[in-house]
Image (cartoon, rainbow, N blue to C red; front, top):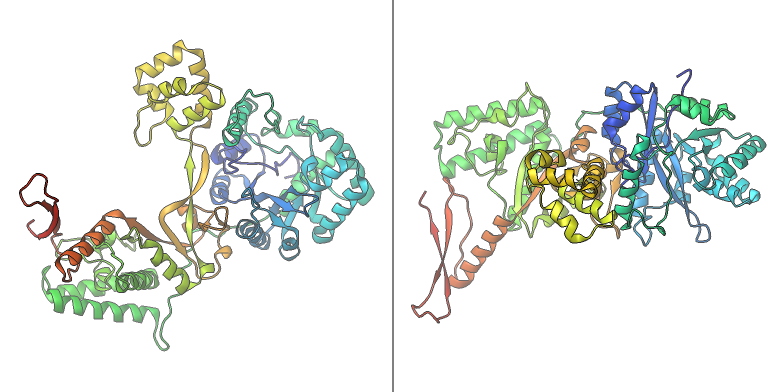
Length: 611
């Protein structure tokens, strides 16, 4: 890093408001342009951190982890954006806490996550801060000509961060940039403060500007060519190469040199791929391996006593059980089985319907013995090795179905049992799919609904459909593209945005249970109002950082069966219990009447066990 330039202020597609930089093309472009490092500093989140970290290392580029945070001042001042960069593990832990607190405790009336200044007093170690240019609190005061306020604000940050606070200089052709640069350089000379150059990157190539503006308009609900809409970005905010940035700041070379100095100071190293299972409470004098063996053997003995051994000799069952237990303990997963068995047992005790088991987990006799599943794997020749195999090390993964209405009660039990600070759901991202992005782009271009609808309906409604596939398959769409220039422009612009992250949701069934506070592993996100707590990492990334995912799936079929059984009990006046029969039985519901066409039907239910 003896020469060149490093981009330290950049929004990826996970800045859902204004970023359209995709992670893999970013690191490929940085490598192609000879950049030794690059930072991703998304707006108030670390959604894409793990993906960026992995992709950057694969491309031979040093990843710098950070985020743009809205810092809340008093009501007179509102809030301002500053960029925080992680120097080390301590900095990452503190950034994670600041981001989590901004969602859980700092959301304003509009749902924007705000970091309160008093939190910074506690969580500032290991972080480098860039001032935010003309749009930061110091910069805003400088542009307004209030030098005293700028010095006061600068003193606040320097008292916390010292030489880890940099006055950020930007020349992005936006109003106030140049005035700010001159004032900031003067302030830096007066106070011996370091300066650093950034380009506040929002897209990779210059010709992506119009697509970026379309993304902003989609979020704002604006029309692209609307004269009155805010224009907060410029076409200069692309991933410029080192030579361009050096030429841009040739009068302030130290601002370029300091990008390299900061990159050298940022040395966060993430540990990925090491599982951190939550602790399962074990009685004194017992090991977790011993507890699993004890419960599994007792459970299998009860199964055999009640149902026999339809899959072979009893000796075959015990031999299979011992083999599975050896593999489970060897791979370090006894806690996982005990945790799943515990919350399933609790659900059944609370009269919450639980599915009989599906997927590769149904091949485990240990799971059958622990009442995790209700399928005898020996009877149906189901292989345990499809679920766990020492030669292909991966976390076990039971897909557990619960009654859709009562699923949340089981999650609440787990949160109460292990600690609410250790349990959450998992974030997922909706993307701009082919049909939806055509409709969005058509709207921001100002086309009428009927016009856009006609184009969108030519795109086949199929899983995994893309605009390229649609054009290859649909002759009418190709013809429309070639004959109508407006359609061609719409499809070209939509193609640039297709696949970008659009919104944040929650995984349908994934829940993580951590051995300590979740913020030791990942930042948290929640919906406005404090509901819907979730990790900011998606299901693949939470497993990469070591968290263990448990699937709590809500199944409507179980709910309907539960309603049906209750209706039977009500009508017949005696208890009917739902249980799983092998081969699975079929529940038949009949509608019977008294024979008259106008008579009120009465409901009759019967169990049909015929295969």
